[in-house]
Amino acid sequence: MKKYIVSMLAGAMSLAAAQAWAADAVTLQLKWVAQSQFAGYFVAKDKGFYEEEDLDVTIKPGGPDIAPEQVIAGGGADVVVTWMAAALAARDKGVPLVNIAQPYKKAGMQLVCPTDGPVKTTDDFKGHTLGVWFFGNEYPFYAWMNSLGIPTEGGADGVTVLKQSFDVQPLIQKQADCISVMTYNEYWQLIDAGYKPEDLIVFNYTEMGVDLLEDGLYVMGDKLEDEAFKDKMVRFVRASMKGWEYAIANPEEAAGIVMDNGGQDEAHQVRMMGEVAKLIDQPDAKLIPEAYERTAKALLDQKIIEKEPEGAYTTDITDAL
Image (cartoon, one colour):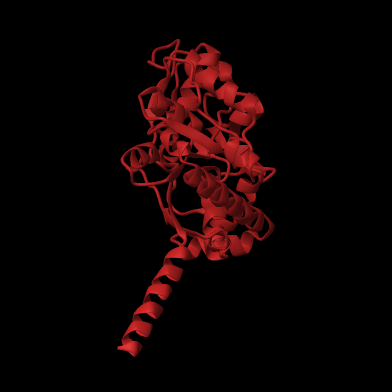
């Protein structure tokens, strides 16, 4: 009987210890498939940075049929990576997304046109077909066209918008006069397809001052009322940015880790990592208020959102890092 009691006590103590040391679960939903665009998160998990913060992080890749805003609204994630335009548009429709950190300081979106095509400057856009991705990626494009005063319903005085596939085939197959690319991805797909830099005219959103904030971290606003959840997000962002710092300093190793998690073409992932590092700039995850205001204004001007967003971001998490 004595041995039985001792055994029971030992079992109870072991269970209590296991519960006390159980890591906090976090599910992260990415905006796109596994690639170096998200290297910091994969590196943080691989290197044990999340574990050091007592976190058990599950990283869910995205895809063409996956909208992070819908995933988190349905309870399928604790935090998502998405573009601010998509987040604010979802918020305008009743999904209370809040930006808690902004790893990407600059936008990577560009429009490219072949030098032997009809478009040389923005004055040449009218009457031509321009490709852009949808599922929330179209908002920066529409905001830009609005700033230029160019209608997007076609016709001689406007542009025809091609709902672009997630590759560069519309330009190669001459379905569009210009297409959208990211500095770290599709631009290099064109180079790999045989184009030379001098064969392309590049309209870079950041350089033109019409960039909207891209890959940020978002949670549901009501979750931030829970201090335990906020603490968990502080630890998550801190470990994630440690992962980004490591990835930027070790691009080849980071690309290898991405490959281990489903990435394709290691040389492409290494190159992507180098381009992504330029967009992250200082890996402090702090949101630049001016960039937020520019993004919100562009969406309001285009009537992508109907009302001025309030409480759409918080600095509480990054302030606590």
